Image 1 (cartoon, rainbow, N blue to C red):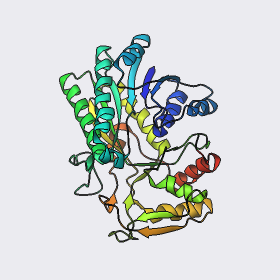
Image 2 (cartoon, one colour):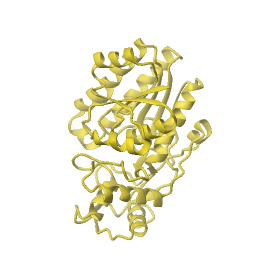
Image 3 (spheres, helix red, strand yellow):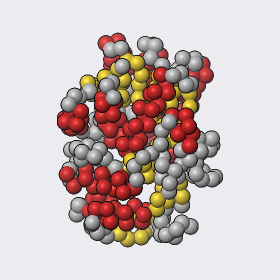
Length: 335
């Protein structure tokens, strides 16, 4: 089976590509490398003893997509390609709608022309915004609080409408919570360009001496220690969720959304303290003012994913912080 993975050179995409290859699939990666490094393919080959086909290009390029589908028997698509920085989306919303929404429409048009109607979409828990209750279920209403989240919601709606118009479209909408960790080999991991958007790269940059101290935004939330609580999930578990979703598509499961989270909320200090204990390192930190728009607690109810996909997260917080640091210490400058 040949699977097209858009954005497959990125953090979550590359981990998913490894699991696809290890499961015996043929993989074609399309990536414009705007937030990735081609060295990742050498690392994938070291891990798998094979590498995916790689095409450098953009999902907004309909001519390129048509060539890819014309030259290959593509069974299904895992669609990661898109921009993902919340702050940047607020500053430049048109860029996000152009990349994430218009690019997706172009991809789906070409898929439709070639009769390829199975897609796993890389969505986000940001589609929920500030939910009225937690844990968050898939039936929680859409309420994105920024253009990034809105772009993910819009693509979800497009795919849902495609399925309604033609039930040959088989669609899995995967709503990620907070990915952390890295491949246990330490060969691939999160390599953000510019200022990181997530907690763990900041923690590891302090541990490696690149930053003097970690700033924790808000110490007065109504949580067990005053810091914000989030659902952190190991990237290996997240990658495995995509394989489970592909299996479901093969069984004509229709169109459904799935939370990919552990169902457990950890505070920022939980993460920092576990990192220090597990890796025997000190992390200097300071509590600073809350960030606008941050919520106190946010974690998933993953029971639907467990029931429908037979998937659940298997890695602990200790696994997450150990593997993330293993990647960072072996690759202090990234790829």
